[in-house]
Image (cartoon, rainbow, N blue to C red; front, side):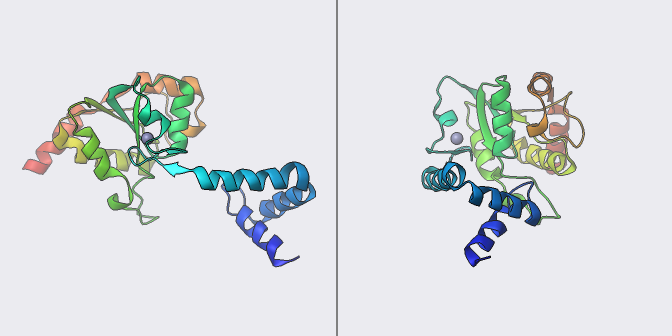
Length: 209
Ligand SMILES: [Zn+2]
């Protein structure tokens, strides 16, 4: 097999959920269906690469900056929903139960992956939350250990802004990722979000002592 096909297999194998074996299978499937799959897909990939933009306000991926959501003036500008990744934003948008704006952290704090606070969009979140327009920040992070560690860190950083901080409650199972929840569970979790004010004031006290 030529180096071009080897490269195709190598890249496909890097896609989420795939590995070298699936990479080979997908590559072969594409090569066998040149007209109706390989060519349209390569065109779609090139187009997406040319038009994609990262929103400098919220971190969303779209074809324009600011993204469509940040430009939507019908949304409630008093609420910011903090999520780990774009897939979580998509999940919340699918549930159609949230009409505020978003802030995408770009992952979680992770000692294992060497991700620290500077690797996440936390500074710009604090700036946005400090705006008088914003009265509540919802921490919609995954119910994983890293997600919750990050939530507490973000809460601590937001303490000085005096903004009300809440988090998703019932419905999100431990170890659960938002993207895998059905819309009903996600809606319940969002509606039953709890205030983190008590813990937040503890955090403030800790830092002032
Ligand atoms: Zn945006």
